[in-house]
Length: 445
Image (cartoon, rainbow, N blue to C red; front, side, top):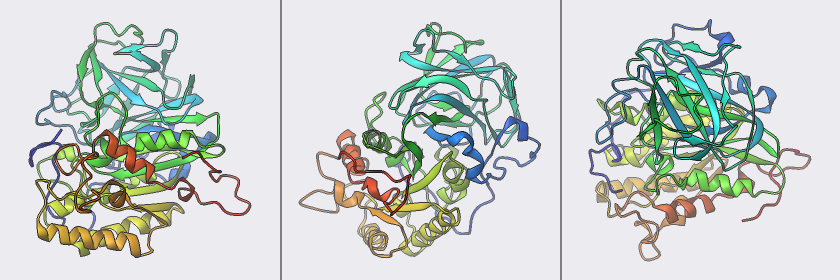
């Protein structure tokens, strides 16, 4: 999975020249609160504390992007859906007895009517475990109209789900949607069917599609010791890297496995990675890379249910298109300031080695050196995860270790993402302190 420089998997984008752009994060609210509308392809994100009722945590998340044609992909997000059911396959980081689903029209050009939706435990392919399909309601109704620029939660539904299991979220669009808000690069096969197939358990009649559509999150009311959510904010290295498809081997997935093995209070994991994403701005004419990390921070990170800690790993794409260290560090400082303003912790991840990749130059290497030195020594993060050291070649710290390199010199493969997750000090995600009753206890490495 070694992309060409201009492919959807490649890095890069235009340099950001101003402050935060005009795009704002989507409004995420219960249906009963949808009087706060008219906000366009963004809206204003609510305080994440509004999403913690019932001690909800984010079990799965996918950062949304504008619908459009995606080079090399047959995802229909550009044309949209009409009288079709999309069945999203999602990997859950936390288990519990109740779930709720977040549907998204964050970048829609017009309201999207959902005729029905369901959640189920995944069996195989497009099939659900028999007896596990649960219809979703929205303020008690079977359907919902999601305004342009908005995201809505379903009503909670009772469904026993295990941590590290896979769910099916099915959404039926009876009318033409226009371009569909989606997540384009998933390392996961998903499904489409004609008509309303939300109640279908067998999976018959479904065809494959590579993208997640109309769904941006699954919350869990945890039954165990999960006390909050850690959100991984990043680009393709966080989103999918070059990991094996349908195997859930992204580095946040491996982190979820480690956290699930903790004895005592622990955290769920939300993946806020986007392939090709920039820290400082959007890529002109390439909406499938998403708006910049600064512009999506409120929705994709601070708006996650139960968020306690953020792990930031962005900037290699900015370096790849000539952005200097001073601008990247200024972007990091803004992220840190906004995370701290919400009373949350943030860990800074050093950028992975990239010598030998298509974007490497000596000047960009110098920028990388300066950025990583600042992450390690500035003291502005609450913790540092040294992903660079964890994945570097023993003979050349500017290159990925051969065992971790997917083959393009930039993206780690399965072994590399496992090494990244292993580099996270779990005790620093929520630090131990005297009298704290929500800190992770001693854990198995």
